[in-house]
Image 1 (cartoon, rainbow, N blue to C red):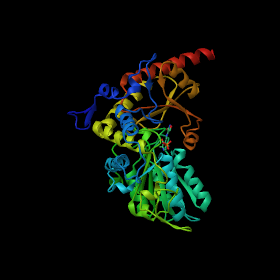
Image 2: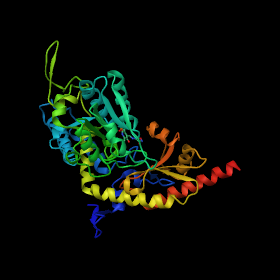
Image 3: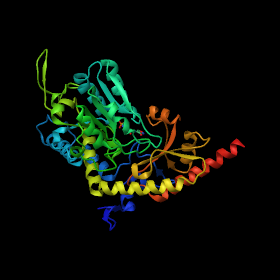
Image 4: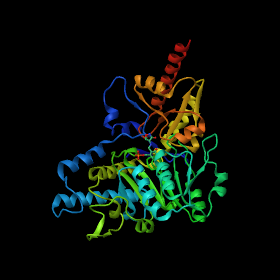
Length: 422
Ligand code: 7TS
């Protein structure tokens, strides 16, 4: 166990970060300079227990699922379905049949926009999103709107990077069919007040899809408490493997929805001209799924539960407080987004006169891995009138000392580029 109770009533746990780092082979690798990984919002590192769970599948019971009547196929099926149950418990879904395995958040959202969207959206209907969406939670709705003649509407943000909720009453009308929004911004780290927005959306009869790619890995998420209709997230941002994602949905909605991708595994019976589809989740899991990856994600969920999501959230909060304080004394540095208490995970910044790609390049020389670019959130970049930002993002294995290295790297970049301009 890595979490230790503390006396402070607000901080429930603290993490034994050294013990955690020991669980991640990539962080133990000898290299010069040492890797300072500050890009977990793009993808997280993978602990031994996840690698081992996948290794064990390939070495000892590699078989297809839901079809073999021999021992290793039955074992693979049992472990795959056990992973589904673990994930259901992790987000407090009522039943494991509400958990559909997909490839990633992007596929989960496309599934809903295509399947639920095609059955429920008509010309004149409205789809409400926010300007801080990742492209994965914008483009599927753009296509749906173009296909059906529906209209996209946007919740704007304040200068500070919070949603402008004063507009909500005006934006949510009887024409609104769905609100599709991110729980946590991948650029600003803003945590949005999902429960309030969900209640307001339901009051006008709209459904709610939550893009939880940046929240499920970092803070406790309870789908029953949120009362969202759909929730999408990716395994690879929560210590799991790539190639596995999740769509949670309310059961009545999943039951009513037409299939998205079809083929093997999705059916009850097939005639020449038509077919009867299986119940969810099988209806939405066409073809051989990512078996090892689902089992790996199950192991990741065990790992995160053992460490504790409250403890992870509190640890990241401490890192963010420290980073905000330390970096803000660098002259010419702009930090985008709200204060640490309203966000998690990420800090987006620009340093006057230096392109974010150059910043990331200089940091890389000292082993510090950050992301620079538009972060697949171009409408948000347009809002801040920038084409890109540099983003450092944190997770359970990061330390205060790594933030010092980020700080040193930013100062080095400043020196290099100031000298060049003279
Ligand atoms: N939604 C949000 C909020 C995200 O941050 C991302 C990925 C996605 C959806 C898409 O996830 P995928 O697993 O389907 O690719 N975000 C990032 C990022 O910020 N940097 O690289 C990927």
